[in-house]
Image (cartoon, rainbow, N blue to C red; front, side):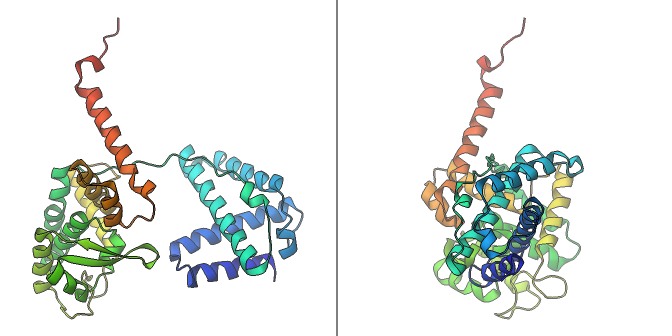
Length: 319
C-alpha cells in the first residue's frame, strides 16, 4: 500500500466507522494532501508506508514552518494570525489522526507525531444576541418571507433554534414523527454530532408554535421533513442562513449574527438566569464541559465591558 492509498483508506474509515461529516472528510483530505506534497518535496520523494514511520520530528517541524510561511505570504486570503493558527492546528490534528490510524490498522508507528506541538490558538468567545433581539428573530424573519408557507415555517424554525438551543443541522434533520414524544413528555429526542442522542425539553410556547406549524404543513405525513423547502424536500441550511442575513442587514446587526448565534443566545441567557453549567452542557450536547465553559468566559467579558462603560472610575481624565 502506498502512502496515498493509506490516506484514502483512512478517509474511508473516518467516513464509515467514525461517521465524519462530508465537510470534515474534505478538510482532512485537503490537509493530508498538503502534508504529503510537502514531505514528497522535502524528502526527495513521497515516502512509502515504511518511510512514514521514519518521518522525524525535525521533518514535522519543517512542515509546520512551511505552513506558517505560506500563510504569511498569502495576503489575498485576508486571514488573521489567529485564524491561520487555527488552520495549522486543524492540520496537525488531521496528521495525528492519520498516524493513529496507521498504528492501529497497519502497525506503522511514528513517535514523532506525538511530540509535535499544536499551534496555540485563541478560542473565540460566543457572541450571543440580546434577549430582545433573540425573541424578535422568529417573527421578524417570518415577515421577510415571500410566501405564507415560508413565513410560518421560518417562524417555527427560528423559535425552535432559540427555544431549544439546537444546531441548525439538528433542527433541519427532524421529521414530523419526531414531534410525537414532545406531545406526551414535552421533550424532543435530538441526534447531534457523531449520531449522539440527547433529550431536550421543549417550552410550552415552542410546542404551540411547532404544533401550529404542523397543522399548516403542506405535507403533514409522519415521514415528511418538519421543515421543507419550496419543492417539499428538506430545507437547506443555506436558505435559513440567507433569511437571517437579510434580517440582520435590516436590523443593523453585525455579521456574526447567524442561526448558530441563537444557540449561543440560548446557552448564555440560561446561564445569566442561573442555570447550572452541567445542565447547559447536556442541553447543548457538548462532549466536554470545557466547551460549555466558554459561555462563562463570555459572560465575564460582557460584565467587564459593562463595568468599564458604566463605572465613574473607569473613565480617567487625561491631563
